[in-house]
Structure formats: C-alpha cells, structure tokens
Image 1 (tube, helix red, strand yellow):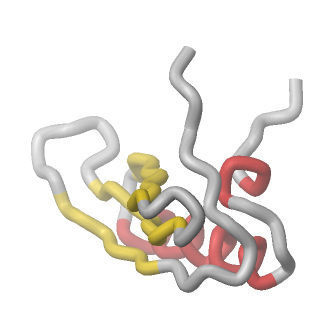
Image 2: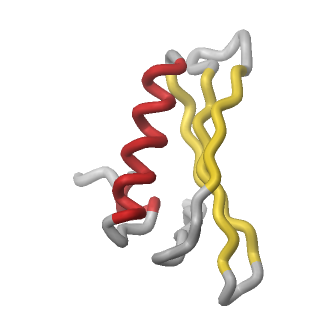
Image 3: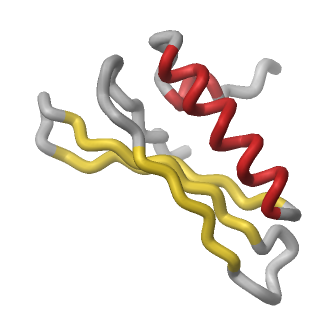
Length: 79
C-alpha cells in the first residue's frame, strides 16, 4: 500500500478542483503544499461525485490543517 503525503504543520496549503468527465467521481479535489524540510511538494487528492462534495472535502482538510492535523490524519479511515 502506498504511503500518502503528510503536510507539515504551519505550511500553507493550495487547493483546486478539477473536473474529469466520464468518470464515476468526476470532480477531483486536490490539496498541495511544499515541505521546507525535504524540499518536496506534497499532494493528496480524492474523487467526488459533485463540486459541492469536493469543496466540502477541501474545507475539512483546511480546517484540520489549521488545527495542526496533517491531511493524512484528517482523511484516515477508522477501521
């Protein structure tokens, strides 16, 4: 299983939503940041059924980051 990117605390996030037609979840919500420690650009994305759902996912990631929680923990499924 591939490891997802972890955004460092206090690093500004950039977000976007891309429409990709002919897919089951055509709206790809993506959050990116630059890790000053590793000098790497980190990215996390998820497909959503509509634009509102994608925007809600991004807002949840932003709020978690403002609280000091990296996106990987904010999106982790409890099982």
